[in-house]
Length: 109
Image (cartoon, rainbow, N blue to C red):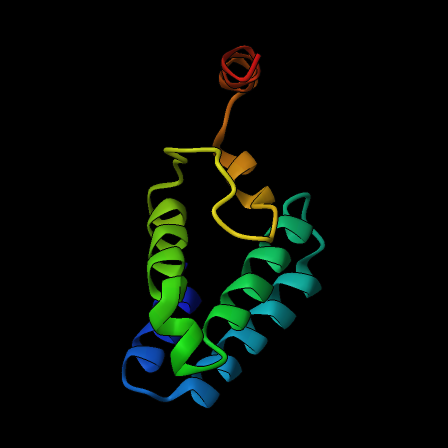
């Protein structure tokens, strides 16, 4: 969550290359830990990296999506399960209980 916030601040300042470096360093750190959520977090960071790649991508939804991801990880709570991008947000599943998953599945029928 800290890396997302720091990278977002740099993107807001127009320092997209610096934001990419922050995300890259965080991705390497996540990969080295080999936890059960490693893959989901790596995908989250890759999505953030793509959204921070340019001013255009940042201004056209990137800022909002990264802010949402940062907030979700800070609270360790997911408030929606909809995929708002072309990247499947596996990280959203980290904070959803099995009972909540059941409710979500029922609501989609």
